Amino acid sequence: MFQNPEIDLDTLPGVDQLEWQGLHPAFKARLRANFAIVLAIVAVAISIPTILAGLPVLVAVSLWSALALVVAALMGWPAIAVPRRGYVVRDKDIVFRSGVLWRSVTAIPFNRIQHVETSSDPLDRKFDLATLQLFTAGGSGGDLKIDGLGKDVAEQLRAYILKKVGASIESA
Image (cartoon, rainbow, N blue to C red; front, side, top):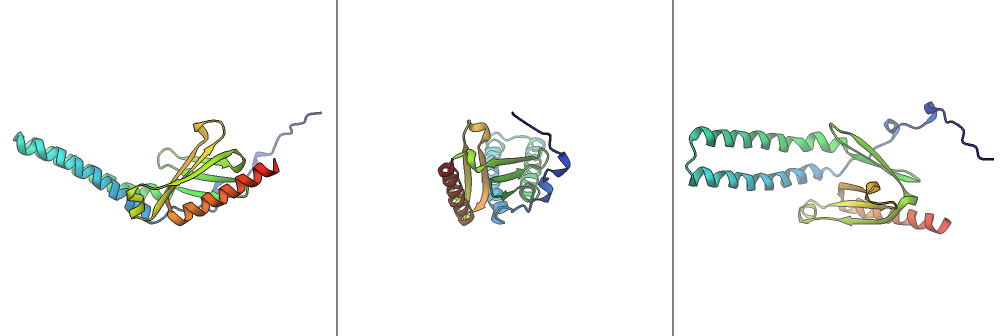
């Protein structure tokens, strides 16, 4: 006969009790470098009409002041956001947390993972970083992407997860 007893919620483990692993310290600098590149393009885009069209001084000052506020906000953001990201590798799953205003915690069981890959763009390689991406059964809604890992850590995690996934396939 099928039974499905209730579980006392007080006995469930909380995410506060986990020992979160932080992202690579260079990830903050990488994010700032990315913002700097984008902001340099925006600064050029603001400069061209300012110089060529001869915008009034008040308009030019307003544009540059707005850009200065955006620069300050974007350069400060990694110091706020990166420490709030982290991951935990457990025996049967990997857990990832992120978010400053909208926080999320995602747990991906190893037995749901179908594919694991690491990737890095040129800026990631400059800072010796990589992204670990997990693809799960059941579509893209369950996929997990962890940016800001050290290249070596991302590769170690990829190898470990593939080993765990292989073990779960063989034991099934």
